[in-house]
Amino acid sequence: MTEVIVFVVGAIIVLSGAVGVVASPNPVHSALFLIQTLFGVAVLFVLQEAHFLAAVQIIVYAGAIVILFLFVIMLLGVDTADNWSVEPIGGQRPLAVLVGAALFGCGLALLIVMSDKLTGIVRDGGERALDNQFTDVERIGRVLFTDYALSFEITAALLTIAVIGAVVLTRKLRREEFLADLERVSMELPAAVPDEINEAH
Amino acid sequence: MEVTNDWYLLLSAVMFVIGAVGLMLRRNPLVMFMCVELMLNAVNISFVALGTELNDVSGQIAVFFVLVVAAVEVVVGLALVVAINRRRAAATADDMSVLRG
Image (cartoon, rainbow over all chains, first blue to last red; front, side, top):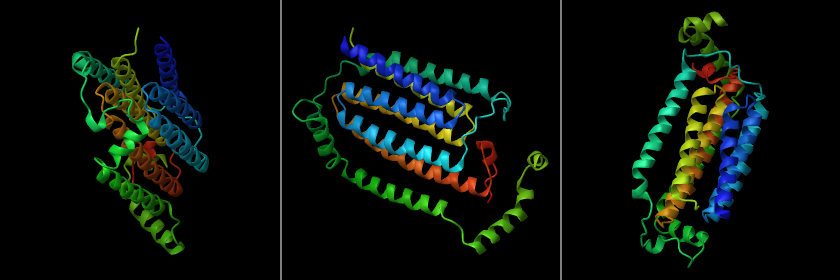
């Protein structure tokens, strides 16, 4: 019974946060709602005895990624509300809700059809089994550094590439580079921009 | 009453759809990234639930890798947003539709 209560509370935290991210007009509020959702997910991880992932969820997601979002929002000063009256593509919003409903319907149908195939299977997981012999931290450590060692190394390369990419993308241009760039853009822009955008400026 | 695997999968489906609809509705690129994070987290929930169900720690390993990819995606995406905003103020994704220079 305790499990059910914890699940329901966690689910409410997660879903209200998710709706808040989508519905709140201010990006800063969206980021704070995202933190709420991530904490809810961490609660659900603990409920499933994935303690390591719950900790990583809080430290990496709530501690680093959302803070990065907040940094960028503050840096750019884009904390203005979305203008909901403008609809860039005609009928985009009803269509989006329709696609969402279809997506959910497909998921639900799959879940109902596949439900009996996904539950009640007890396998002998061997080295990877989640039993009480080792904690989940030890299990993940063992499997990550044996079966998934190559993937783990590639992750390191991926992170390095991302860091280098971020530095290259946001570096300050030297003055002559900037001026040359500006000249090129101003020459090319009228041809590249469709008429309606040209008129707006 | 007991919490079964289906509960987690259902929650994951609802959360994924909220994220997907948000991605299509919102126009602020930062909020769109947050919606992608929601979708990734929804998938993480189902990974852990299925891993527990199938008695296999690989589900949790997959979540670990999803976390790394999510972090990388956010770093590069936000760098792009900053780089674009430096050249011209772009409050919505539509302002970024012309990406030449």
